[in-house]
Length: 346
Image (cartoon, rainbow, N blue to C red; front, top):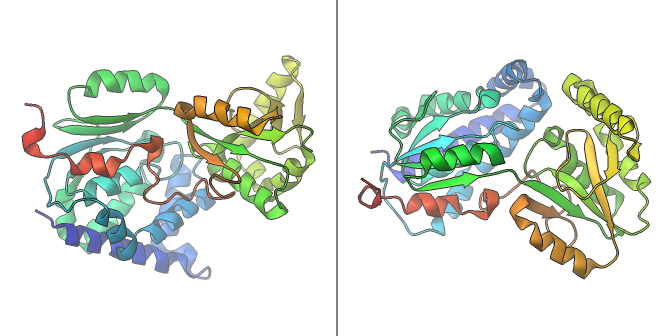
């Protein structure tokens, strides 16, 4: 059985390898990281090389011994239990499911990993590299096309797929996640730098992540030109055919529906109560009383993954969560650490 210390050491070595690969712009295009980013882009047009590189960079920094040891040190020490944990990974942004993989490995359990068809290059490639560094890590996970033999499950999907998950996985300990999104609350005092950070929250990974901001709450009479100006840092979005197609489609649809849409040939903005907006679109809503707005946000927390703004998460940090920023607020490492063979249903 692979010890916790061996798991941490091998994951840390993977992080160090990736950091070294990303450290030199001159040689980057000859690296493993660049190669898998390009392969991911070929497999999925939403996974542009620059977006996959951002995801790899995030995990390169997260996978170091100090971070990993600090993370697990807040939980009671446990020896590897080798419970078979089925992982149904999301695929909306590059490597979004890797946190579940990491938590399962560090909890001492064995991961049965079903990658999303949209993200079936990056995670398998990193796990293969992990085994190259430490042969014994092969015992800690299996990549599968169909889950079988699982004793617990972490599954992420849409509101519709969650009903299927609940039916199929309901007989074992499970964590099942649904659709969520990010919102931002502005008060009108934001600096240009903070607004540029907000645009990163909105449009990193093309806005496809559950931590991406899709709804802005703005003080009454807020000048939307501030948003349009800040958005120009993301002009490269229009280099992606999939993004352009979404922009063109939703602009035409809104015109046909005679909706009052504002746009700058890069993003579409519409005054809309829904928290969720499609790719290329930002919903916004004006508020007059911040106390009333706080109540409204509180009432919709089941749909909200993160809140950006003064008094909440910093602007620009939406897609840079800490290891302890658990999806849907469910502590997956605590869930996994409590799994023991004797406590599982027969």
